[in-house]
Image 1 (tube, rainbow, N blue to C red):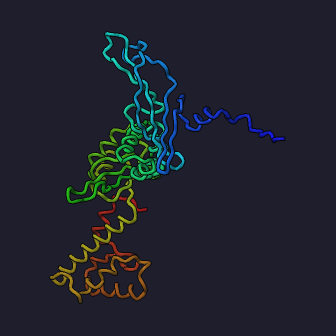
Image 2 (image 1 turned 90 degrees about the vertical axis):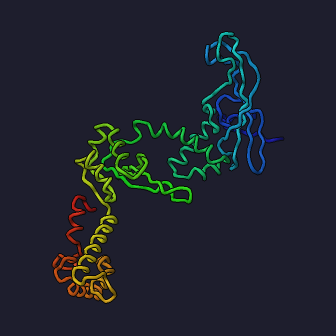
Image 3 (image 1 turned 135 degrees about the vertical axis):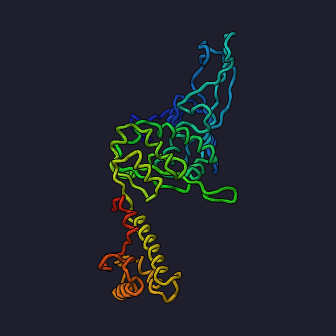
Length: 350
């Protein structure tokens, strides 16, 4: 006596329908499938028997099939090719300029796309949301870089241009990025990243590292968007500072510690070299006090040992008789020249 297998009622037990559910495409007949060690090939056709002419709407006459090859989502951890056997029709209206019609179904693939709709959406999410490179995703899909990048550009542009893509921005940041590195056939090309600092979200990328493009981008936003911006972060670039002063004059400018310290060290070194020439009449030499303390001047206070701090104070007294390099009475509190303080006074340090 054989045991009776009891299956849940929700299961599809018809093999043909189960295969269609597994494929996951809307209203298609699965004609066949081929699987080897390298890839998967899936042949399908739609269930549409007749269609109207796209130009005049008259019911067209069936003419034959046209096989279109598309890149689909990987199946069974292998690149998958979808062979869509499209029906072709001819318009029976003699005055119709269209003549011939090939069926389209945007649920399967958008016109002129080489990826299926679901593959294009998945690729856009992998690149845009998960931060994977186009080349990496293209390899996993089994297609070339240009094929996948065209799909990402097509699907991603609608997302980038969506009005509600980002909400209220309180702190906006500008920073330059080397977009194309220098090579034998070209020079380094820069772009400017516009970022919502609090949300950590990239808002847009504009060409160049000047102020014209970021200023134009901000002006193209609504008045409500600009009025909500309270802070502007930048790397002490004069061009970016001019953007904020011109377009967002009420925004508080914020510089990160790295660039503030870098600028302070540069101005301090300029002051040290000038005092060196004024006092001794030549550039720094091995035995000159200010030259000997050049490394100690730019070292963080917490990294100075007691011996190093004593040495620094002594060399400054010997080489800086008028206190121009170290204007503060207590050298242990830090060293900032007048030029440094006037330069960074426009910014908020945090």
